[in-house]
Length: 187
Image 1: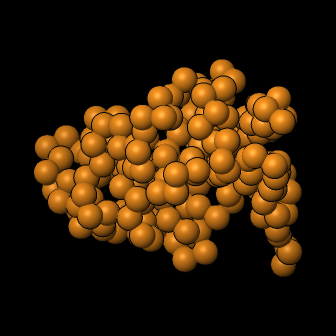
Image 2 (image 1 turned 90 degrees about the vertical axis):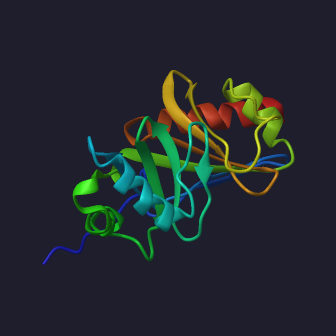
Image 3 (image 1 turned 180 degrees about the vertical axis):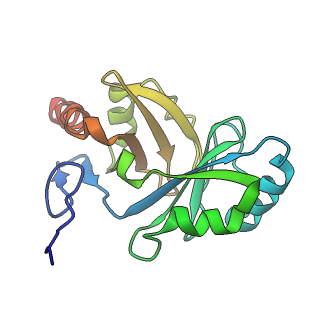
């Protein structure tokens, strides 16, 4: 039997943390992700299940920061659902069982890298790294944007100094380099 170990998006056996005096960048490897797309003619049923799961259906530009599951709008009748990997490792399978024929559910955990950015300089950092209106965003706002030529999502979390960035896992090192370069330039 093989003794396999998972690796993070940045290639380590533990999530990477880069701390500066003004900002902290944490590779968050503890999130399971799955996309949900309502099937044609089943939108109302899908919305009902989403509301039961998250408390509300995330609208355009918004996330529902529900505990333990959270979700954000990705496009018309499409959402990304996230939950702690420690307790929801099979999130996509769980969601498929809940949604049945109301939605198409796709495993996304291995497709995205997640970075949590915190610190008092987070708004300045965010303005330098991507064109989202961070100073007008409130907890639960979610935007699709470009960071260093990569399509990413930026989600304003509940703490005033916290954003979560989801980017393509295949470009995790490039995205991380852009985040580090920006943080270092601010020092």
